[in-house]
Length: 282
Image (cartoon, rainbow, N blue to C red):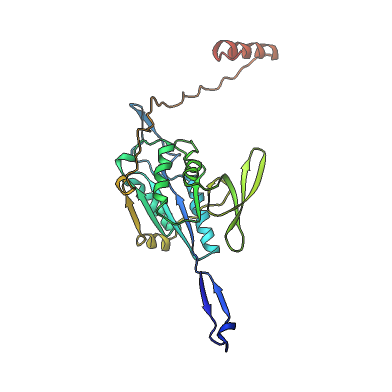
């Protein structure tokens, strides 16, 4: 906050004070890269094999990036920082999010981060965010590869800030200190009003993510991307909280449809027989 004295006043005791704010709204958007859900995959030795298939920004995270960019359009003095944890290949998604309108990015990359469960992953993100000023943190509702929907709420808990999940609407007060949040609930929606800072997980319906423009793509090449390793996070002890995949397999192939013919009584008899003897339903 800066105070400016009006020099036109004759008496210094009656000086006019013009107050204006230089505050910048700081938004952190957590971004994960996932396999394109439209890609054809194979399972070999209990692992997903999809050579040549594209990796994309987690679709729910795209809603978060778009929400941040739209806030910046309303309040130009806004700074958007991307935060992503993953291997070298994640930089492709970071660059796309920068091209959408984010200002800079932090990439957490270390072999020690591989296989972390949601609890430890949130601890790593929280430790890195402690180094960054923020007013608002945006995450996707969940990652489409694991569908746990745990990291966002856990992150907010570690940071000690309120959070709202499955958000479909965001409105700010004139001073951007309070947010009116619409979230999806079963059979409808509910509205919450909270003071910043807070964390929101974004749901489909919040917005329609934009495609990066050529200008945005060119600008993204000059934007700052910092890389942090585990050693940069003040000796964070990750323990042995890892997820071990026991087995992974594709769903069974769907059987071909059966057309039953005959009279109504005959069809009913055949249907009951199939449900009882083959499908074991009755």
